[in-house]
Image (tube, rainbow, N blue to C red; front, side, top):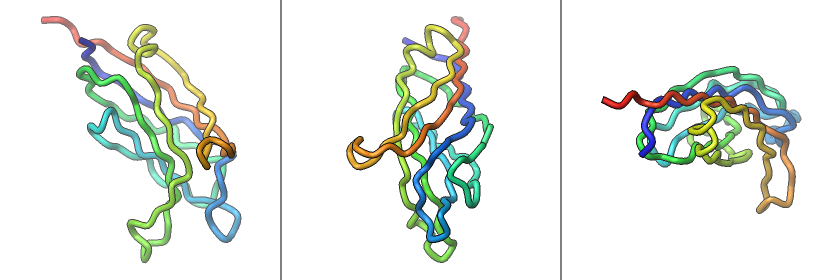
Length: 131
């Protein structure tokens, strides 16, 4: 059984899909581990190449995947109507073994037929000390 602290840094994305009339998107990333402890980055306004460099911590207790969705934040009057830009997941087995991993994932939509840029995420795992 794997237990410990997973530190996730959402570094950046490049080449995201344009979702706004002005040729840009307002992206943010929502992260979670197997439906536990959802967290999100700040919104970067008016860019298809956002840089977040934001770090999040997750307690791991047998979970084995980090999931993420990139959303385009819409105007406040359309709250709850944000558009999904892309999604994906990272199998944590390699992170549990190596402890430090940097992943760059190609983003797709339309069942994988269209490419929508890449996202870079750094992961660090600190196993719990057995008592």
